Image 1 (spheres, rainbow, N blue to C red):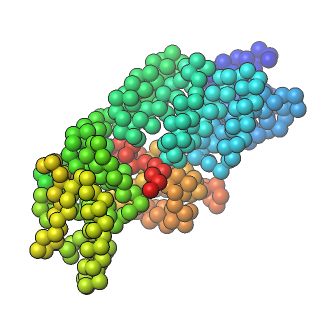
Image 2 (image 1 turned 90 degrees about the vertical axis):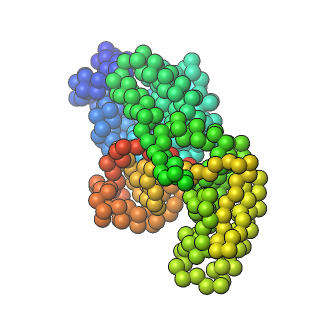
Image 3 (image 1 turned 180 degrees about the horizontal axis):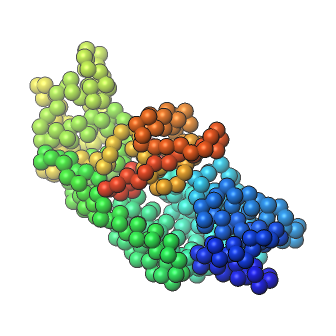
Amino acid sequence: MDSLIAASARALAAGDALGALKRVALRDDPPALALRGIAMAQLGDYPRSRELLKRAARTFGPHEARARARCVVAEAEVALAMRDFAGAPRALAAAAATLEAHADHGNAMQARLIAARRLLLLGRLDEAAAALDALAPHALTPALAAVAELSAAELALRSLRVAPAQAALGRAHAAASRAGVPALLAEVARARATFDSPAARRIDASGTQSLRLAEVAALLASGALVVDACRRGLGDGTTWRSLARRPVLFALARSLAQAWPGAVDREALIEQAFGFRDPDETHRARLRVEMGRLRALVKDLAQVEATARGFVLRPLGGRAVAVLAPPIEGEQAALLALLSDGAPWSTSALALALGASQRTVQRALAELESAARVRAIGHARARRWLAPPLAGFTTILLLPAALPSE
């Protein structure tokens, strides 16, 4: 490695993209192309970065497998920043294996960390946790350790494990300080701000109250019967019943919880659960069937009793009842949460993260665009979508996660 290449690599490691470009901007040899590609990524020109990294990978000789693998890893990180999930994870896994075989453990860990972050963005939390656990901490540079701890903190927050998240953010701040990269320190500061921002709303008989993440965790551990509209289920801290795949039962449970300790009329329940404003006897019969299913599902937590005009929820053990609702609701809430991270998303990436069809996502984006809540850049296959940050609250509980199996 010549002196200019070495100096450019050191500048990139310190986050000085312009300093790195000054040393290799006029060179077209493979190492210079790779460094230019990484520098352009740091400057935010992702399409140009990917072009340079692809050229570098093609230009490296047949005996330079490690260099080509490094290019694959760098391009995968650029694709992650572009929210482009079309690439096969197998290519990244193969690059990691090649780097391990050449004793390049630092770059191999970076490849595995990119794979874990990809899973986290897609809401595949269990797989992301397994991928993060497989990382070897001793092989991580301070910068990579900071990114790994930030990912661990987000994973803990999305599972509402507040204390582990705070510990991970403390480790991330220490690692970012050792790395001396201002962008990493700023990212840690933004992550810490989520603890002080409203994350959800508590709805009960006394009204509506905004809750921070620590207060959400305290409510869920309080022993109260909580109907959780963020994770689509209900529980009392020890017992949990998921209704993520049973929207009618969840709508009924939420209606009863919001009215507690009062009852809800049958007509109101039919409208909220089935969408019919003028119910007939068939709708009332269906309501009785669904209420029977709800009773069977929550029998260890509460009783659902019929009254003269409707139904009422009676929690066991004299517990209080509360509804935990996200800060904003609606079909587009999770879509807005994904877009508000400041990165440009393609329609296919959004569909993959939300577990929805591209056509469904396109319709939702069209509605949001007409309301001036999102904007598009580019055209045709290069079109990407952006939204301004959702100010005033954290979106951590709005982000999608893989639905639990029944």
